[in-house]
Image 1 (tube, chains in turn orange, red):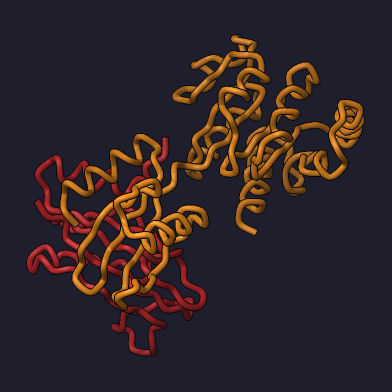
Image 2 (cartoon, rainbow over the protein chains, first blue to last red; image 1 turned 90 degrees about the vertical axis):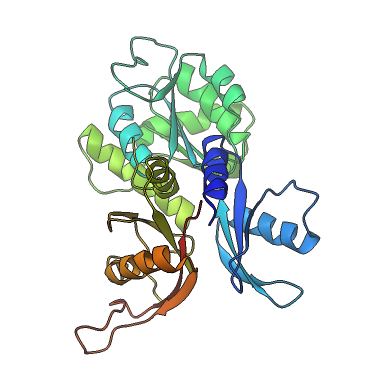
Length: 226
Length: 107
């Protein structure tokens, strides 16, 4: 690989711009291919788009029979945490280790402080405005943690209107039943509401905030990978 | 926060320090491979490495081969399978088979 190409790839990753490193295995010729690049051959653009959509590298045969290795580089998965509460602190750290770009949303500035969340992206807008700006996509997970319907519900409504791959809401079975009732009244369908994991997290008997964070991260991983 | 996944960033950082660097990438897997396609290892000229291409079974050999590519300047594609009974044989304990591309970073 040319050092200049490596630097371009590192820059694309820093800009969160999806790209694919294509290598012709017969002679080691390499290039970065962006899915929007109209100057590339159509077979390559198609294969590159598939590699990015599936987030999976592959060796493919070009029309001329040569072997190419396509290595997709998608922007990181995202995790939006609504509620800068105690559980959000270990969860933000664990998710960062797992490679997620974490954003913590809480209009209560005493909760969403950089002392409590060093190095994390903090948003102190109201959850509905924050969610509109963050525009969750199919590579985004959303977890509400406030227990307060005034904060959780607007976030969940925005989450349900998005293609987020995981939606979780902290709260007991009773709290969740009340939440389901409120969302039904607000016009959300049963199948839509069923996307919400509540009570949130895998049942591993978690007690402490860090343990609950592990159970939530495990459930997000399970949803992503299985 | 996490830098264990920032293999390319680390490689670029080493290059910026004037070091020579090679990259190893899993390009194909069969059976129960320990790391998926696209997994990468960056190797510095003093054999320091970050990332992984297996669960640790073949990294030793890959690092040796990578240092060789720094000398030859040639990209290599190698295949690793399950190890046999011979202790010096490099292989995967999991029973899978993987193809690894090893390339020097030039310039």
